[in-house]
Length: 360
Image (cartoon, rainbow, N blue to C red):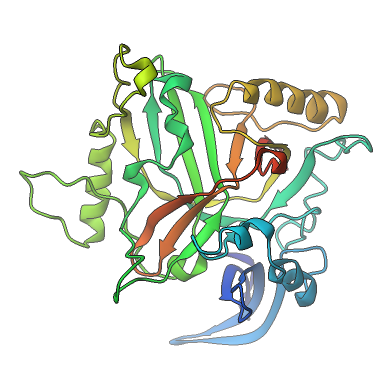
């Protein structure tokens, strides 16, 4: 996923490489196992040849050598995956850790801006560290607010392929969870910027060139698979209004249809290490109850426990997000994001989460 030089001299260089490994475990429910970590390589440049002198690998956890501790929580069957086993395969979960894993560049993230923050014994939120991941980030500007419910599903312009799930040519795919949604104020309009963040599974991330979504124009020739044409097409998407309009329910038949979304964009980025605090919630990202839950989270995490919130560079406000754990974004190895599955889950499970991002 990434690499940087930690130390360099005339004799050798030390390079830290970050990697992801995804595996389908051979058990009846085919658990998706994801391991993330780093390798520190000591290499020597001998002209046309790079000689590997030493390699040290560690997993993203406090005990970086504990392979059993990394595997075992991912092998047991998860209730909702089994409940919906006929709908889609088990999900590959974005890793979360209770403690920050040390790295070569930063021996411990515990020595950070949040050194004074400490979770209280009676605090109901969950504190998690997330390792760096490659993600895809579709976004748009929405002017319909809660009524339009634009944030409730991945937008069409975020998909790069279609998945065949039936017939002799049906395709295998990797579901990943959760889908993250961030809603922020758009400074240039009365609307909101809605951004989805979806972790990219290693099977797809290993491609040399990752496809971007293209909005086809009848007057233009198909751009094909050329990476440059994909970038140009994506730039066009930013100013191309969505052709999708939602049909209002019968009870609102006298209301005008929602406005089309604007400023469609999509791209890939390497998400940095994150420290987040979350509270469970059973609803959807644009429910009115989410506002009250954000206030409670800010009061518990920042005001009571002393953590430092990460601020949006544009608005200067704390960064809140919503995790849809009941959604699966499905990737194929060649085509990328091609389908989203939204599972029914009972309200008592409170499987989704409202979160705040913290400085780390």
